[in-house]
Image (tube, rainbow, N blue to C red):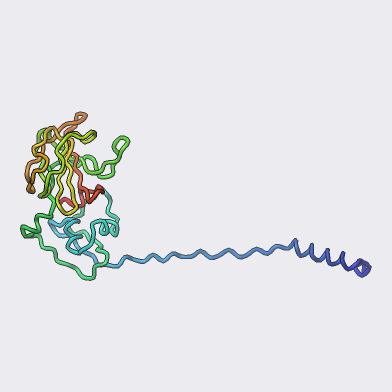
Length: 225
Protein backbone atom coordinates (compact mmCIF):
# COMPACT_ATOMS: atom_id res chain seq x y z
CA UNK A 1 0.00 0.00 0.00
CA UNK A 2 2.91 2.29 0.68
CA UNK A 3 4.10 1.98 -2.93
CA UNK A 4 1.10 3.86 -4.34
CA UNK A 5 2.13 6.99 -2.45
CA UNK A 6 5.69 6.93 -3.78
CA UNK A 7 6.58 9.00 -6.82
CA UNK A 8 6.78 7.08 -10.07
CA UNK A 9 10.49 7.82 -10.63
CA UNK A 10 11.44 6.36 -7.21
CA UNK A 11 9.52 3.16 -7.97
CA UNK A 12 11.34 2.96 -11.35
CA UNK A 13 14.71 3.47 -9.65
CA UNK A 14 14.03 0.71 -7.15
CA UNK A 15 13.00 -1.61 -9.98
CA UNK A 16 16.22 -0.93 -11.98
CA UNK A 17 18.48 -1.38 -8.94
CA UNK A 18 16.79 -4.64 -8.10
CA UNK A 19 17.37 -5.93 -11.59
CA UNK A 20 21.00 -4.82 -11.56
CA UNK A 21 21.82 -6.97 -8.57
CA UNK A 22 20.75 -10.14 -10.34
CA UNK A 23 23.65 -11.99 -12.07
CA UNK A 24 23.26 -14.75 -14.56
CA UNK A 25 26.28 -16.99 -15.05
CA UNK A 26 26.69 -18.78 -18.33
CA UNK A 27 27.11 -22.51 -18.21
CA UNK A 28 30.70 -23.76 -18.71
CA UNK A 29 31.44 -24.93 -22.22
CA UNK A 30 31.96 -28.62 -22.69
CA UNK A 31 35.59 -29.48 -23.49
CA UNK A 32 36.27 -30.03 -27.16
CA UNK A 33 37.67 -33.45 -27.85
CA UNK A 34 40.62 -33.43 -30.20
CA UNK A 35 40.41 -36.00 -32.91
CA UNK A 36 43.84 -37.50 -33.47
CA UNK A 37 44.12 -38.89 -36.94
CA UNK A 38 46.32 -41.90 -37.41
CA UNK A 39 48.99 -41.29 -40.04
CA UNK A 40 48.19 -42.95 -43.32
CA UNK A 41 50.59 -45.55 -44.62
CA UNK A 42 51.58 -49.20 -44.33
CA UNK A 43 53.83 -51.18 -42.01
CA UNK A 44 57.14 -52.58 -43.22
CA UNK A 45 58.75 -55.49 -41.37
CA UNK A 46 62.50 -54.96 -41.06
CA UNK A 47 64.62 -57.70 -42.61
CA UNK A 48 68.26 -58.61 -42.03
CA UNK A 49 70.68 -56.09 -43.53
CA UNK A 50 68.13 -53.27 -43.84
CA UNK A 51 68.81 -49.78 -42.53
CA UNK A 52 66.47 -46.84 -42.08
CA UNK A 53 68.22 -45.19 -45.00
CA UNK A 54 67.63 -48.16 -47.31
CA UNK A 55 64.00 -48.64 -46.21
CA UNK A 56 63.15 -44.95 -46.60
CA UNK A 57 64.84 -44.76 -50.01
CA UNK A 58 63.00 -47.86 -51.25
CA UNK A 59 59.65 -46.31 -50.39
CA UNK A 60 60.57 -42.88 -51.72
CA UNK A 61 60.21 -41.09 -48.39
CA UNK A 62 62.72 -39.26 -46.21
CA UNK A 63 64.50 -40.84 -43.26
CA UNK A 64 63.19 -37.99 -41.12
CA UNK A 65 59.56 -38.82 -42.02
CA UNK A 66 60.02 -42.46 -40.99
CA UNK A 67 61.70 -41.42 -37.74
CA UNK A 68 58.88 -39.00 -36.91
CA UNK A 69 56.09 -41.48 -37.76
CA UNK A 70 57.62 -44.13 -35.50
CA UNK A 71 58.98 -41.92 -32.68
CA UNK A 72 62.42 -43.52 -32.98
CA UNK A 73 64.81 -42.22 -30.27
CA UNK A 74 68.35 -41.05 -31.07
CA UNK A 75 70.06 -43.95 -29.31
CA UNK A 76 67.96 -46.64 -31.00
CA UNK A 77 68.76 -48.81 -33.98
CA UNK A 78 66.08 -50.67 -35.91
CA UNK A 79 65.93 -54.41 -35.31
CA UNK A 80 65.07 -57.43 -37.43
CA UNK A 81 61.32 -58.05 -37.25
CA UNK A 82 60.49 -54.49 -36.15
CA UNK A 83 57.43 -52.95 -37.79
CA UNK A 84 57.99 -49.50 -39.26
CA UNK A 85 55.11 -47.28 -40.32
CA UNK A 86 55.93 -45.86 -43.75
CA UNK A 87 53.88 -42.65 -44.11
CA UNK A 88 52.13 -42.21 -47.43
CA UNK A 89 52.91 -45.71 -48.70
CA UNK A 90 50.07 -47.89 -49.99
CA UNK A 91 51.79 -51.21 -50.63
CA UNK A 92 54.52 -53.27 -48.98
CA UNK A 93 57.78 -53.41 -50.91
CA UNK A 94 60.25 -56.28 -50.89
CA UNK A 95 63.69 -54.76 -50.40
CA UNK A 96 66.50 -56.77 -51.94
CA UNK A 97 69.31 -57.64 -49.54
CA UNK A 98 71.73 -57.92 -52.45
CA UNK A 99 72.53 -54.59 -54.05
CA UNK A 100 74.03 -53.92 -57.43
CA UNK A 101 77.41 -52.11 -57.47
CA UNK A 102 75.69 -48.82 -58.30
CA UNK A 103 73.11 -49.22 -55.51
CA UNK A 104 75.79 -50.28 -53.06
CA UNK A 105 77.58 -46.97 -53.59
CA UNK A 106 74.80 -45.18 -51.78
CA UNK A 107 74.89 -47.47 -48.73
CA UNK A 108 76.97 -46.40 -45.72
CA UNK A 109 79.40 -48.57 -43.77
CA UNK A 110 80.81 -48.06 -40.28
CA UNK A 111 83.98 -45.92 -40.29
CA UNK A 112 85.38 -48.11 -37.52
CA UNK A 113 84.12 -50.96 -35.38
CA UNK A 114 83.58 -50.14 -31.73
CA UNK A 115 81.12 -49.28 -28.99
CA UNK A 116 79.19 -46.02 -29.25
CA UNK A 117 80.05 -44.08 -26.09
CA UNK A 118 78.22 -40.84 -26.91
CA UNK A 119 75.08 -40.53 -29.01
CA UNK A 120 73.62 -37.90 -31.30
CA UNK A 121 72.38 -34.85 -29.33
CA UNK A 122 73.96 -36.05 -26.07
CA UNK A 123 75.17 -33.14 -23.95
CA UNK A 124 78.94 -32.68 -24.09
CA UNK A 125 80.08 -30.03 -21.66
CA UNK A 126 78.37 -26.86 -22.81
CA UNK A 127 77.55 -28.21 -26.25
CA UNK A 128 75.54 -30.98 -27.90
CA UNK A 129 76.98 -33.93 -29.79
CA UNK A 130 76.34 -33.48 -33.52
CA UNK A 131 77.30 -37.07 -34.29
CA UNK A 132 78.43 -40.17 -32.41
CA UNK A 133 81.64 -41.02 -30.57
CA UNK A 134 82.90 -44.53 -31.29
CA UNK A 135 85.34 -46.12 -28.86
CA UNK A 136 88.51 -47.50 -30.43
CA UNK A 137 92.22 -47.97 -29.84
CA UNK A 138 94.68 -45.22 -30.61
CA UNK A 139 96.10 -45.75 -34.07
CA UNK A 140 93.14 -47.80 -35.37
CA UNK A 141 92.48 -47.04 -39.03
CA UNK A 142 89.37 -45.01 -39.93
CA UNK A 143 87.58 -45.94 -43.16
CA UNK A 144 85.58 -43.80 -45.60
CA UNK A 145 81.90 -44.69 -45.19
CA UNK A 146 81.11 -43.97 -48.84
CA UNK A 147 82.83 -42.90 -52.04
CA UNK A 148 83.48 -39.19 -52.36
CA UNK A 149 85.85 -36.24 -52.50
CA UNK A 150 87.89 -34.96 -49.57
CA UNK A 151 86.80 -31.35 -48.99
CA UNK A 152 88.70 -30.89 -45.71
CA UNK A 153 91.82 -32.51 -44.30
CA UNK A 154 93.20 -30.24 -41.61
CA UNK A 155 93.21 -29.29 -37.95
CA UNK A 156 90.04 -27.68 -36.58
CA UNK A 157 89.63 -26.28 -33.10
CA UNK A 158 87.37 -28.51 -31.00
CA UNK A 159 87.44 -31.15 -33.75
CA UNK A 160 91.25 -31.54 -33.93
CA UNK A 161 92.64 -33.47 -36.94
CA UNK A 162 89.61 -33.77 -39.19
CA UNK A 163 88.59 -35.24 -42.54
CA UNK A 164 85.39 -34.25 -44.36
CA UNK A 165 84.20 -36.17 -47.42
CA UNK A 166 81.56 -34.85 -49.83
CA UNK A 167 79.61 -37.76 -51.30
CA UNK A 168 78.13 -35.73 -54.13
CA UNK A 169 74.45 -36.20 -53.29
CA UNK A 170 74.00 -33.77 -50.42
CA UNK A 171 75.64 -36.00 -47.80
CA UNK A 172 78.95 -35.16 -46.11
CA UNK A 173 80.73 -37.43 -43.61
CA UNK A 174 83.00 -36.04 -40.89
CA UNK A 175 85.81 -37.91 -39.10
CA UNK A 176 87.52 -36.08 -36.23
CA UNK A 177 89.61 -36.43 -33.04
CA UNK A 178 92.28 -38.19 -35.12
CA UNK A 179 96.01 -38.35 -34.40
CA UNK A 180 96.95 -38.55 -38.09
CA UNK A 181 95.31 -37.88 -41.45
CA UNK A 182 95.91 -40.28 -44.34
CA UNK A 183 94.29 -38.28 -47.15
CA UNK A 184 94.72 -34.82 -48.66
CA UNK A 185 92.38 -32.06 -49.75
CA UNK A 186 90.82 -32.78 -53.17
CA UNK A 187 91.63 -36.48 -53.09
CA UNK A 188 89.01 -38.94 -54.36
CA UNK A 189 88.35 -41.88 -52.03
CA UNK A 190 86.37 -45.08 -52.43
CA UNK A 191 84.21 -46.71 -49.80
CA UNK A 192 86.43 -48.48 -47.27
CA UNK A 193 89.59 -46.48 -48.06
CA UNK A 194 91.75 -45.51 -45.08
CA UNK A 195 91.39 -41.81 -44.28
CA UNK A 196 92.81 -41.34 -40.75
CA UNK A 197 94.10 -42.90 -37.54
CA UNK A 198 92.21 -42.70 -34.25
CA UNK A 199 93.60 -40.29 -31.66
CA UNK A 200 93.26 -39.82 -27.91
CA UNK A 201 91.63 -37.00 -25.97
CA UNK A 202 91.48 -36.67 -22.17
CA UNK A 203 92.74 -40.22 -21.80
CA UNK A 204 90.08 -41.68 -24.12
CA UNK A 205 90.64 -43.06 -27.61
CA UNK A 206 87.66 -42.63 -29.90
CA UNK A 207 86.47 -41.41 -33.28
CA UNK A 208 83.98 -38.57 -33.48
CA UNK A 209 81.85 -39.26 -36.56
CA UNK A 210 79.12 -37.20 -38.19
CA UNK A 211 76.83 -37.47 -41.20
CA UNK A 212 75.54 -34.16 -42.50
CA UNK A 213 72.68 -33.75 -44.94
CA UNK A 214 73.23 -30.38 -46.53
CA UNK A 215 74.20 -28.10 -43.65
CA UNK A 216 72.28 -30.08 -41.03
CA UNK A 217 73.84 -32.74 -38.79
CA UNK A 218 71.80 -35.97 -38.79
CA UNK A 219 71.92 -39.06 -36.62
CA UNK A 220 74.56 -41.43 -38.09
CA UNK A 221 72.88 -44.47 -36.55
CA UNK A 222 69.92 -44.00 -38.88
CA UNK A 223 72.21 -44.55 -41.88
CA UNK A 224 74.69 -47.16 -40.63
CA UNK A 225 73.94 -50.92 -40.93
